[in-house]
Image (cartoon, rainbow, N blue to C red):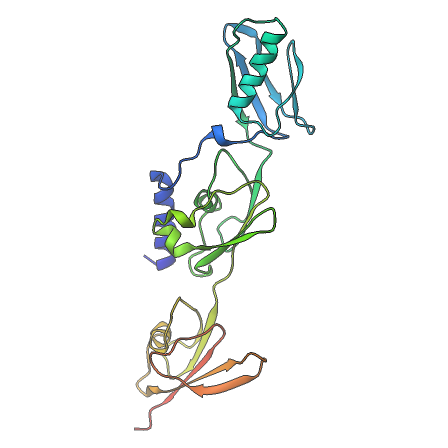
Amino acid sequence: MKRRSMYTYLGLLLLVLGTGAAHSASDYRLGPGDLLKISTFGYNDLSAEVRVSESGNITFPLIGQVPVEGLSTRDAESLIADKLQTGSYITKAQVSVLIVEYQSQKVSVMGQVGKPGQYFLDGSTRVLDLLAKAGGVADEAAADRAVLLRHDGRSQVIDLEALFSGDASQNPAVASGDTINVPRAPRFYIYGEVQKPGAYRLDRNMTLSRAISAGGGLTARGSERRAVVKRRDGSGRELTASIDSADQIREDDVLYVKESLF
């Protein structure tokens, strides 16, 4: 199993097993577009499916408009019951509010995922839930870190390797208007005396030896000790230098493996 596929599998497994904080519709805050099913115990004529208006209100029999935007379902139940009671329509009203369609709160999942786009929140939803809804991260194209951009401009880096290994600290709750971006993985390039020259994914803490392995290993004439690297310095100038087996590769490095002298 490929490493990235394994991470995706582990992430989805954690989701199914409920690792991390459980999510509940009781945490959800109602907003425009949400469709609600409201029932009053013992009063069939006081049951209805209503959609929250753009102004954040619903219309319910006998009591008219009720402002529910920003309320939980439990809060909405209490508010409707109170209005029925204070209006002397029902004594000790028992009201149930269920969310039929979640429409008001959306989060964007962008970048290297199976199905980028906007997703509706349904209860208290976390990063792992949204990545699962978006089809998981792309096997070889995705970086090992994602960015959670909050609706207020704050941002948080998510370590995907730690997340898929079960680290709850990398699985924060998301809110309406947030964006999860999984960028493309950094690349390096290797040419010369290797079996499979070309561009490859730059893994975390990758060394020259591992880079050569990614390129299929040395040819019969290749020498790891004669490898050189071309990379740009802080001013953008391209420099060429020798490189040792344990030296770490950087993003956009171009490695060239020369023939052995003997």
